[in-house]
Amino acid sequence: MKILLVNTFDRGGAANSCKRLHLALLNGGVHSKVLLKHKQNNWPESYEFDQIEPKFSLKHKIKRKIRSLAQELKKFKPGKVIDHNAELLQSRPKGLEMFSFPETPYDITNSPLYNEGDIINLHWVANFMDYESFFKKNSKPVVWTLHDMSPFTGGEHYEEEFYGISDSGLPLKRKYSEEELSVINKNVEYKKKAVSLVENLTLVAPSKWLAEKARKSEIFKGRPVYHLPYGLDQDLFYPKDKFSSRKKFNIPGEKKVILFVSDSIQNNRKGFIFLKKAIEQLNRTDLVLCAVGSNADRSVNKHMVDLGEIKDEKEMSSAYSAADVFVIPSLMDNLPNTVLESLMCGTPVLGFPVGGIPEMIQEGINGMLTKEISVSSLSKTINLFLDSIESFDRKQIRKDAVEKYGLQVQANNYIRLFQEILKDEKLK
Image 1 (cartoon, helix red, strand yellow):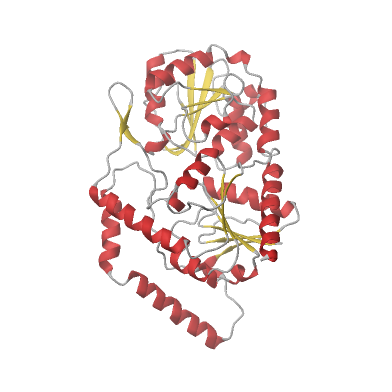
Image 2 (cartoon, rainbow, N blue to C red):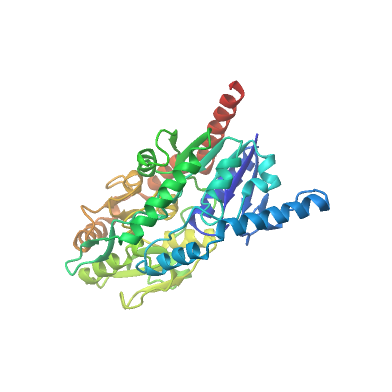
């Protein structure tokens, strides 16, 4: 069984999930390879699209190059289309999640790796996979692992309901411009037409929330959708001694420590502004906020510890272990890797009741959910948690996380799915 995983990058949350599955498949004896648009790391059996050259004759290569250039010119000929798309992206409010278009100059069916695969497992392929050329030319079973909403929306990677915060600490409803809605509707129709060309397409969603969104979408309506949670390597993410971990990061040992993790606090969907205001409202002197990521806001708390970007997974284990609680104030999310990582390290999680987060948190066992999305509700829940820290059994949190989110659990689920798909394919 030969599986080709396809992802745009080898860095970031979706890329990490793709890598973990790939390594687990290899460990399980599956012939797995990864096709990337941009390759910066050295994953085993991973290849960059532009650097792969099939063993064809010079004449064939010249023809292929001419055909590729012709396709690019055809796709992007009216410059007005490109300008229009660029104008839309520039006019969108800052802080919103990425918006991508279904047309690209990349035909991944031209890759020799595509020809090798028995199943094509798409992952986060924005700005890489061209919908029209792929679904028109594809002849293999496709499993698409959804990491966000982009595959079935008109371009938004998350259809964000809220943008900004009111003076009373409530999220403000987001408003769409007529231009945005027009482009979104056109892209949905384009994707629907392209996806209709593929017969054997299976969707996999890490959260039940995202699975239900996919089932109800115009683009994937009627397609099989499976719920298979992410997996984590329990040997990379594990509990470490709390006080040794705090010493490592110069975190006061006697304080109660809240951890926040995000690529950027400017990202509206990540909800950092709600956490900032909730901590200001608490006004506790026994509290320290530790932030992992870029552009940390030191004005949040005079005792804030900026841990910067942490790329090493074992180092992240130390950060989770140093914390009393990991707070994820996201306004919308799938099955956040950060929540899995925290639970695997035995650290309780606190968050808003949105997306796939409620599927991960057992109230009072491995964390807490707020009653609503608001600063006051978050502040009250943090306070309640900090006053009942001792009631959370970190060893049990770790044990439950390993059983539910162990990497081999995920790999075995995928292997069974792949085998069923290939079995059905042979019967046709």
